[in-house]
Structure formats: C-alpha cells, structure tokens
Image (cartoon, rainbow, N blue to C red; front, side):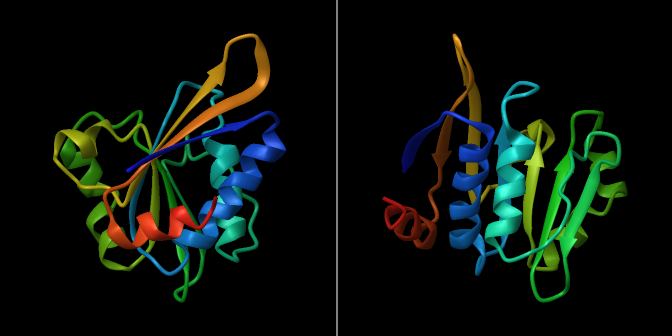
Length: 155
C-alpha cells in the first residue's frame, strides 16, 4: 500500500514523523529513507524518535554512519549507508546485530540493502516541492499487514 503526505514546514515534517513513530513503536524492522540532500530525512527521523517515546538529540549519521537512540526496551538505529562501498562494509558495522535486537532501523541511502534484497517494514521517500522552500512530499509504502492497518488509522 502507498500513502502520500505533504508538509509545508520542517516542524510539520517532524510532526508527521512523530505520528509515524507512534505506529512504529511496537514493531521492529528496516525503514528505508530516500531523498536528496536536504529533503527532510533527518527531520522526519527526529519526529519518529520522539513519537516512539525516546528523548534524544537526533542528528544526521552522515559521518558516524550509525546513531542509536533509546535503550534495550525500545531502540531506534539511524544509519547512513551513502559512503559504504559493498556488503562487507555493512557487515563490519554490525548490521545483522541491529536486525536481531528488535530495533526500528531507519536507513538513509539504502541501496546496499535494496541490492541484497532486504525487505523493509516500510519505505519513506521524501522530496522537495519545487517553488516551495519548506514543503515536502512524503511517500510511505509498506506491504506489512499490521503496519497497513496502523497507517490507515493516521487518517
């Protein structure tokens, strides 16, 4: 299933992320985040983390590759795979460990995962609206039955 949302400010993008965080909270799995630089991937992540009940300063993982938020009871892993060249590097940063620990794993630049056929819980695609500096179009796609029902409740 697919849904499309439009936000007109960074705060609205974070607020949508917060709503998504509420519905992701009891789940685990990979969420692909795609979009050009500045499309709002970090803003929506900030909202998702907050919506999952985690109080943290969320920053882009561009240089760290992986940022973790939360604790053992509920955790969000935010990854940026842009600089990784191959699947071996993905294994070196412990990707399989993150999969096993029941986290929501938000992945920016998920090309390596797509190439290796990792099935996401959901995929979020963010894009700027031409001529509207702060507006974003956010497409959400999922095939997960429980998530589909939760997204329908968003309205």
